[in-house]
Image (tube, rainbow, N blue to C red; front, side):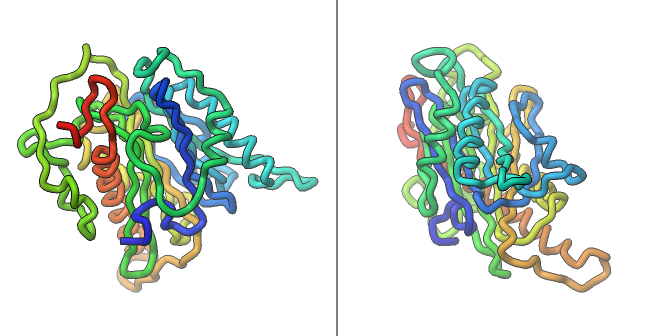
Length: 328
């Protein structure tokens, strides 16, 4: 495990939350001010996204400056404008003539409408700006913060979680995720998280042995879901390789949430590469000497996603009638 067991263990990344408990929503931003190569995989059937087409390998821009995870569904994407403004004031972005920049900020939103004081939270650009102002390295807040403030995971409280690991090659892989899933994060046969076996260094110690009986749905069925996140590595990747890492990372989501990628989820995973370390080169039959390195990073990214999902649920606090794992 790396220093903080968080996505900030990837050098160059900062994380900030803006939390509005009254309106049960918020924003989480992952900043990479110096730029990061990025890819994305959108697998749910009800996504709410921004700037994802730009991440296609054949498109122009190579590096982005932030990813935003938004609550408040489509309304939450307004917060991205504040992140763009913050980056522009700092001079971070796609370089233009005359010293001008255009910050590139992909984003995804989850559906938490109607869980707070008003059906539509008063989200605006200021939420994103404040999340940037709060961004830092080191330990990352988990549970009912940022984009996970009003999140629900199946029939229990969801939230934000993060995890990391260091590979034998010295490459760091990490994830942060906001869990707001239609599917369950708990195996009903055992009352425990599906992917508890992925634990590293006793990280789930306080709740490892706890098992619960899942509560019934808290109200009539509403398609109000979506799990969104970011995986990152300090390995040097191009856009196509970053996209492959995002695809493989979705496997961790599908193992830890069942079912996943449903018609009512907009499950979206971004992948970032800060490019601090070269990919290991492997000789062999295959033409690509980097293929094994990509495979190892993608597998680790999936593991980090699974572990981050468990941390999100374990760290969550009960919200009204929605009970947290720790309170069941």
